[in-house]
Amino acid sequence: MVIHISMPTRICILALIGLPAAGKTTFCKWVALMSKSSFNVIHICYDDHLQLPQNSASKDFQFRDQRTEILSTISSLVGALNNNGTVPDHINFYVKNSENSKCRDYLILCDDNNYYRSMRYKLYQLCKQNKCAYGQIYFNCDLQLALIRNNTRGSQNRVSDEILKRMENRLEKPTDSQQHWEANTFILDASENYEAKKMEILRYLCKTFENVPESQMVDTKVGTEQSLAHKLDLLLRRRIREILQSKEDTAGRQKIAQNLNAKRQQILHEIRSKAEENNLKIDDIDKYVNLLH
Image (cartoon, rainbow, N blue to C red; front, top):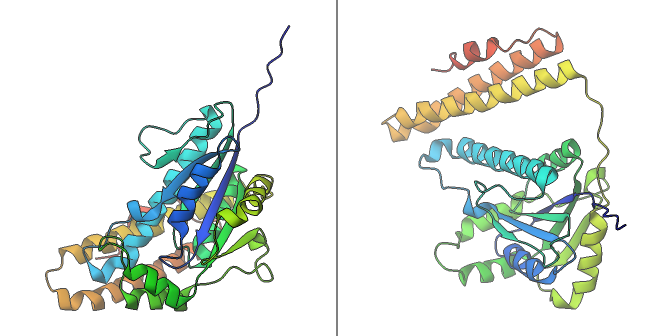
């Protein structure tokens, strides 16, 4: 009698960190070709799903909402992989399957700049909630090299020198000395040849599948209140975006956006106070959203 042992599904979310033109997308394509039967690769390129805001005054809110949607999609993807090992049809991301059809390991490459630590931490939290492994690769790229590479790109993929320089100033480099969850970081020099470090990279990726963050027990009521506060924040941001889009006075939009955002912060402060007093109800959400006008 032949006994078939089903291998458990293992999922690893890998955050890529670095300036535009640092080599992140090139790396993703290289990993997809290199992985062969070691693991399945799912490449999520954020640039394919982030749309340029039509209203400059509310661009921060719009980008934040779009990132939240991508994070939600990744969460749905993880759930689907855990359930049946397939990518849902409605998730139109680039997918590269390994040649080994029996392989149950999935590497999800989050191809984004991830220049703020908070962006990476949201991915880490997602891993913690879904018992996935987490790792990150920092593409150490000199600003001058990034500028040179960026200027060789096509017009659709090129960013302005000003934006690139601003991102270089804002980039929060990973550091395990201050953030323990960033300890599993692999550093790649942008000028390095991936093939020359192939075995080292492969060992890191395979080892990272074992780096599953320990989940913490969260009080159900506290978790529900935090979820309601997060939902309210998203609805308030959407409300602000709708208000700004309805204003014809382009020059005054920035001032209006500042005032609305200040109100949003006041509302969230009140909500958090209610949560601490265990006095937050789902019926409060619509009432607070309507305060923005």
